[in-house]
Length: 112
Picture 1 (cartoon, rainbow, N blue to C red):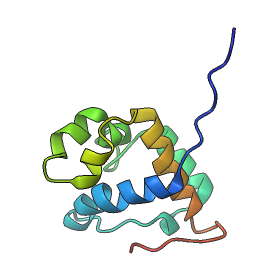
Picture 2 (cartoon, one colour):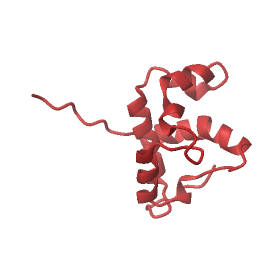
Picture 3 (tube, one colour):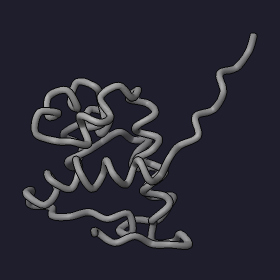
Picture 4 (cartoon, rainbow, N blue to C red):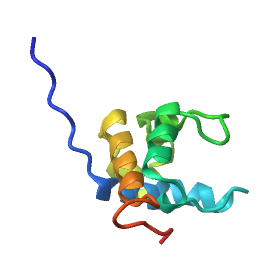
């Protein structure tokens, strides 16, 4: 049996998706903006692994799913751009961005 090659996550694609898709909702919600530097690398990994969003009300995976991207692609260029990506790959990109800019990383990221 041959193992599938590991996906090489792209933190820059994750940054684009986060800033273009995630931020639009976070700014409008009571929680406000969330940046990668709001958590440590371990906290981001645990958060993504737990698949809980909105204080456990939603699945984080839903917000990177093809279904979600299809539902907003008419008004969101990033969602439209990544329509054909697999859900798993886009989630890995988002995780790579969060970890790349975590508060204990070499380059903590802000909201902009």
